[in-house]
Every structure is written in C-alpha cells, then in structure tokens.
Image 1 (cartoon, rainbow, N blue to C red):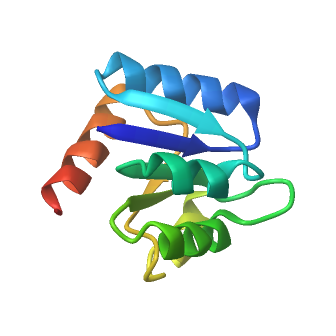
Image 2 (image 1 turned 90 degrees about the vertical axis):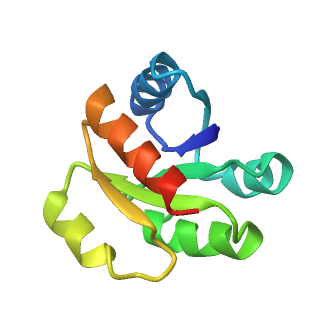
Amino acid sequence: MNILIVNDSGFEQTVMENTVKELGYHAKSCDEYSAVNFVKKERPDIVLVNLHMKETCGDFMIEKLKNIHQQGKFVLTSSSQDKLADKKELSAVDEILTTPADGTEIKKLIETLKNDN
C-alpha cells in the first residue's frame, strides 16, 4: 500500500509520513507543486491532501489528481472540522480526516479505503 501526503507544511508532512510508516505502510510526501508529477509517476493507492495550502485548496487539488489517477483514493485533511464537513460531498473526495490524527484514526481510515475497492 503506497500512500502520498500532499501538504505545504514540512512539519505536518513529517508527522503524517512517520505515523503512516509506523503503521507499516509505504509513505512519501510532497508539496502542492510536486503533487501532479508525483501522482503521474508513482500512482499511489491513497493520497492525503491538506485543505489549505499556499496557492491552492486541497479540494481543487484532489479534483485535478483524480483526473490523472482515477483508481486512487483521495482524502482531504484539515484541522478545520467545520470546513471539512462541507467538502465531504464533493465527488472527488473519498474521505475526510481531521488533523492532527493519531495512528489509530489513520489506520482505521486506510483500512476503510482498502475495503472500498
């Protein structure tokens, strides 16, 4: 299971990537500028995309990435639970995750997405 974390915060990238790796999954991270090329090349199973980034919003990024990689599962992440709830209805967003999230929450999310196939 390959998981990509898209976030413009290096700290948040590191925390999420380490948590995913501790759960036994293969994880990489990048910012919004590298995400399109990464998804084209690597075709990750799950992509975790932060809602608020410097020059884009995560929901728009997910729409773009989903057009490139329809088989991937896309999760919108944010610490703003209210804003995430509004975005859950978007067709390109498979799941939402309120951050910070612990390993138990992330594992449950990954297992749910794996079982959706």
